[in-house]
Amino acid sequence: MIKVFIVDEHPVIRQGLASVLEKSAEFEVVGEANNIKEAMSQIGELKPDIVIMDAFKGTGDNIDDITVIQQKYDKVKVFILTASTREQDFLKAIGAGVRGYLSKVSEVSQLLDAIRLVAADGTVVYSSKVASIFDSTIQQANRSGLLSTREKEILSLVSHGLSNKEIAERCYVSEATIKAHLRRITEKMNVKNRAEAVATAIERGFIEVGQDLSDTET
Image (cartoon, rainbow, N blue to C red; front, side):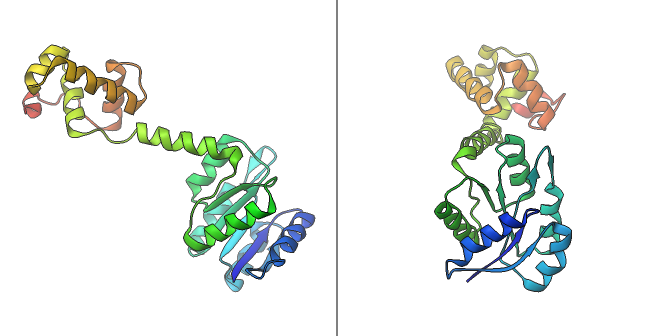
């Protein structure tokens, strides 16, 4: 049985959600609270598997509440059920370590499936309304991933003012190969040109300013 604790400032929402969950023998609503301050002592005593809450209301957010729960009760999974579709709210929640994120307009079956998944293996669940945000975030992370050793070497040579032809000669490859490397580098780093790639690589610590050219010999 999955033990659930519900936190929401609106009694109607708490009672409605509890009613939906308790129709299934899989779920037990062990407690309810108006806010996190009320909930904290009860969570420690009742030991729920999942705390369902809405951290985003109006123009403000209670993202710190997520951190408080997870710091004090590391085995409790936080599940956000919210009306917010703001990209920044979703990203804040993921950054804070929530294990589930769903819209309040989701179907009941979708909600129950999401809670099951989170309880079973900690999978982050998100609604279709924020799926595209999640996907673009992952893509951005992939593009910004660490450069390969060869790509760092080429950027270091670019930072010293060498042309593609000169870099190709030092690396014992064709000029076309160097151009292909630089194209992949700019795509990975999501930058427009080689100059911006060098500046970004230095900022991120991928290459060092003033590195001796002898250090890039192959």
